[in-house]
Length: 375
Image 1 (cartoon, rainbow, N blue to C red):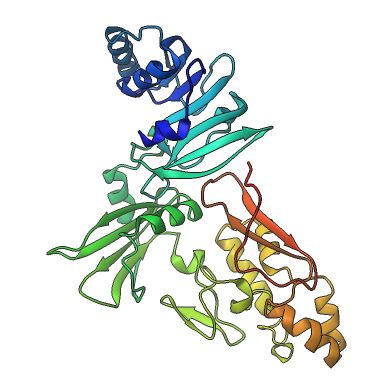
Image 2 (tube, rainbow, N blue to C red):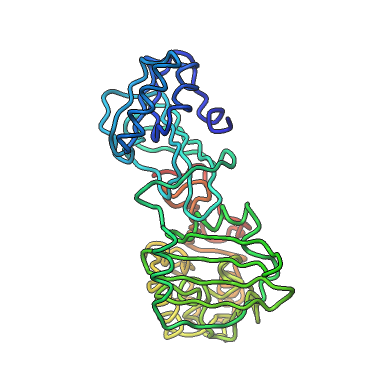
């Protein structure tokens, strides 16, 4: 019922449902808004026909059941509410276009497990909102991964083995799983809690035909095995340069850049000499950018992660100790910032980037913020 609460449909409003199933949810909606105001879409013809019969026998024969692909439903008119009863990795923009201004959208996200309800409201050509609670539905058919396909691409070598000293089992924290799922697109997860055979976390990316396993036994370190084109070292682990590195989740010289403010790991200082509190030289800067590109990070995000202010390199190049002490070192430490953008994927959506821009001389806040996340 949490999903219907997030939808907040009112009597007389027009509702579009994606994923009819047996018609149970459509009947609940019809009891609130009226059967004539509910349109539901089901891709499986047999299920759609069964739902029509069930709804009619329950007194909701006026519900319109369409057999079509719910991702891009061909429906007439606008709707006050749109609800999806399938797990999805990205919100279909076609759902936004059929909403009236101020209309409510309540889909389920399901990229990594566990899925959660996302409640969005349309404003102009965008839809913005937040996570509204946990839920559990089957994934969209086009996004389902079978056990057989996982076995097939897990047989592709070579396999690499190692260990990790991350202290918390990464599969048992629901809140962490939701956050990871929004940031690491295309990755699926299976989790077996610790028992007689020990716990195990499987991570697999079907598009890249990559899979990794972490055996959670009695204590650290945990054994890790992975194969395919998508490795942690390509997606997250920083290269070693300029006196800082991070390995096995423990930092040496500075924290892991995947979870810590970038000034502390030297991202702003990449390309600056250690003599001015930098973290390397031009070659280091190129290596870091190359790793981001190999990980599939958009160039705009790379630019925002390494932005330090257009005047800072020129002040460092002068060798003027006054300028270096007053502006360059504090900027590279994250205490002062020039033309500086912080970008991070919106936790609630996979619809865009959350951004905040600052002006030179203002203190660096601890976390990125934004008034709104949009498509």
